[in-house]
Length: 557
Image (tube, rainbow, N blue to C red; front, side, top):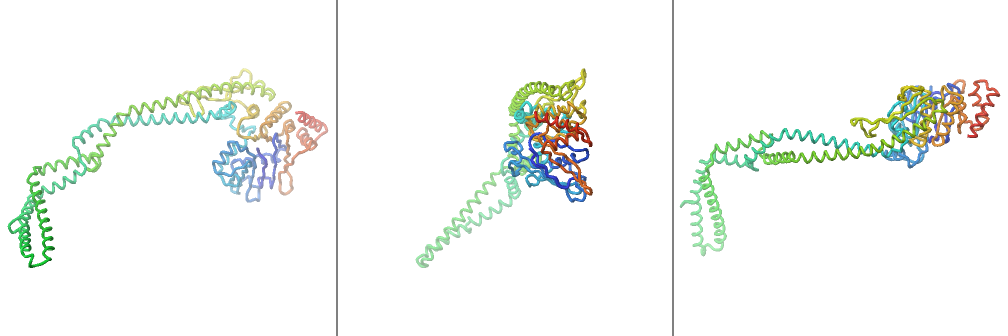
């Protein structure tokens, strides 16, 4: 609930601090005294639009600080914690407006965006005026009110999760069908490509091998001649092999004469002889290979052309053709199993839809039952509010499937008829400002214990009414104040007399016009203010007697 409101340099207000209580708090005063400024100031702290006109003349900036008490078990407490804001049972909202109309906001002395400030404020305060009834003209708010009354908040969250799961499953199925259609169109082409690759049978490293072989064939005669010449130098009578053998024999025969150094030379000659014979064997092998090769240059060129042509077709390297073959085979395998994939996705769609519909239908039944009860209670509240001829009906219409949403399968709106025999029409279309305010008041009395906000502000909801109707409005505000903190700006003495806390707003000062707020803490002060509200500027004994009577009625209640 709202505990304190501190205002500095807002329009007519220099500096003002208001401490609020629980129950029904009434703000009264003559027209133009500044009651609207108090509401504008509270609105600033709640994230309302900032304007340069709100800054008091001569001041550099205007500021408003609102302090609230919040329950640690509330949704708001959790929301603040999730945002990393320091939290306790005291919540301080502060707003500063510069001369150019630009503003900054803080929550518990931590800077926040105006958007987030509004989200927090919506959990703290609801504002209801004669011409601004917190969305009552918007049918979307009707469903929120009914669901709160029917205690469907948890079901709504669960249903929203189910709805999103269903829609995501449908999206996945549509995507899979699209891919399957595209794949089917491509299947014939892919099979032809796969057949070509299997026939071609490309091997890893084949291109490099073919290039090397082609180069060898191109230089075959020169290579063979070089090998023959080398072989001759190694194996002829005057070749290296024979020379090494003869040298070894000579040294062996002279070993006794030469000495120990012969052994080292003999060992090195053995190694050289082994190397020469190994080279000779390699040359023999190469010579044999060249003599056995029967592949032609034309065959090699044709193979290289076929491989490179296939690589161009698939926009890849020749070395990647083997991998491309496996890739195409995998795509075809996926196409073949597409039916199983689509079947599984379709099953998921059906199952998630079934769960959604099951809960949505249960919620629809609860809404219908809650709607009937709500209609009956609202009709009872309308009688003393001088709307006894009005009809109120909660219309719950089953939507077409394409209009179902996270909130369910129903369209919910409040319908009314304010004249006997008239058709029921949407509330926002036919109710006047005064009637709308009384409908809202009736709804709020019935829905007193639901809703996150614990502070409700009513701005002149009693405008244009008096007597027994005004008394009924005051009585209902007092009943509502048993569950919520109610701030009411009123010109009605019947309403003001029901308040548990009462402030009078007045203007003072000669040179600098200021707005003062005086707390009326005793019945004598309250009697004078209510008498003024009854009689006007000239307060009579009769007015005081009537005021005392109203206050006496208030004490009995």
